[in-house]
Image (cartoon, rainbow, N blue to C red):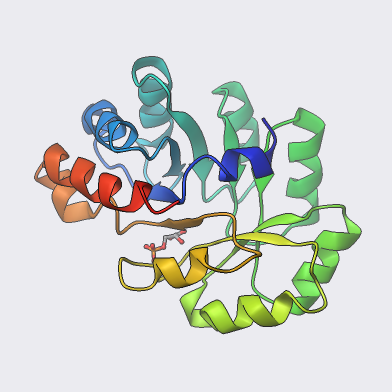
Length: 206
Ligand code: 3PG
């Protein structure tokens, strides 16, 4: 699958910050059984790669990506762990090229027209828009759609139950990402039923 195909699988990609790798499999199962199969595990905790390995090995049907891929060293580790895709908050050509060299689906982030232009000139047309709400949200994406009609986005940052449908209604939005479908409090409480219910409530909107 390429990046665009992965982003077409589910309307919402849970952005996960996993502190305790022992919770990863139950969390992954709750989300996947709720209909959200594409998971982004951010490299913001020491447990991230253990969580990625655990979900890849034990959660059937999960498409397991790494998020917050900020350095070539992290990208190398992603390749070693066989992640299904990678996400970065920003746009950095060496990372874009390294991901292409390794043939790993990659979703770099942009927030401005200039970064969009850099992406187009590198042949990258599927992008994260981050942080979405803080950078003009829906109206910014509509505006980018004028000059950059060939670009497609996964907005993340500040997206929640109250606004995600406004993003999904846009023609240049493939899916959205966010942490609201797997809130830290519910993960800490290990309330997998509540997380599954949250996943179900958004998975049907596609
Ligand atoms: C992120 O990379 O932190 C994501 O965009 C999640 O943002 P959110 O916590 O505002 O959903």
